[in-house]
Amino acid sequence: MNILIWNIMHGGGRRAVKIIERIDRGHPDLLILMEFRGTPPSREIASRIEELGLPHQLSTRSESQPAKNALLLASRWPLKRIHWKRPPEPKERRLLAHVRAPTPISIAAVHVPNRISGIKYPFLDALCDLTCRWRGGGALLVGDFNTGRIGEDESVKCFNRREDDFMTSLTKTGWADAYRSVHGQKRAYTWRAPGGGGSFRLDHAFINRHAHGRLLGARIDWPPGDPRPPSDHAALWITLKD
Image (cartoon, rainbow, N blue to C red):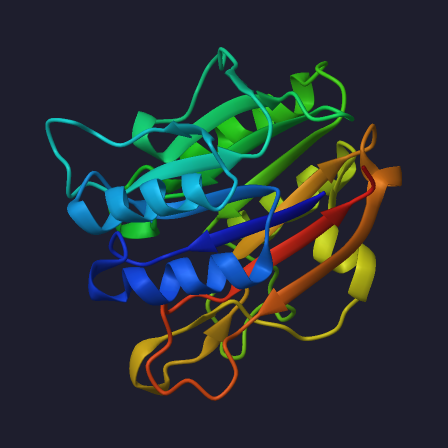
């Protein structure tokens, strides 16, 4: 099972065609997009990936506020939305679902707000609550967390102790950082700040102990040699044993 996790930046905009092309080249079985919106470019992406073999889709987009950042989960297999007890807010930034694949998996997809929002830490607390109480079998917690480890996931100082503690707490409760499980402490980044302001690993996939034995690979994918890439984020690929 190949899983693509990607922040497509502002709903895709004029980059929608490039985004669709990169998704097509990768042939994911499961796709999670952050900054998906209810705008025409995002709707075009959803329509085209359905044609590419991902017909089962769930979205958190707002019908009344189509330009609001949301999530899209698309799959080769049927999806069932799961009730999230004590969920983080806003609702557009979290989605919990069960994937009815030959070997099922549950997905908690998130886009954690930044510090300026004032709700980042309550959001992280709600994710810790979910992982501590999870009893649903094999699962992944994935998305753009706007968070990383001090000194490990930043080229310049950015993350604070509160954010570092969040990363550590997931490991302590049995949710492993999939990329680190494969690559150890190798330096890698998924977002580059404009104007040379540094590079950071913001996009993560945490896999619980019930599914960890299925983990085959993890890689960060920046488009090679593209002066105008389809997003300011790299794509994160996770491969699980079917």
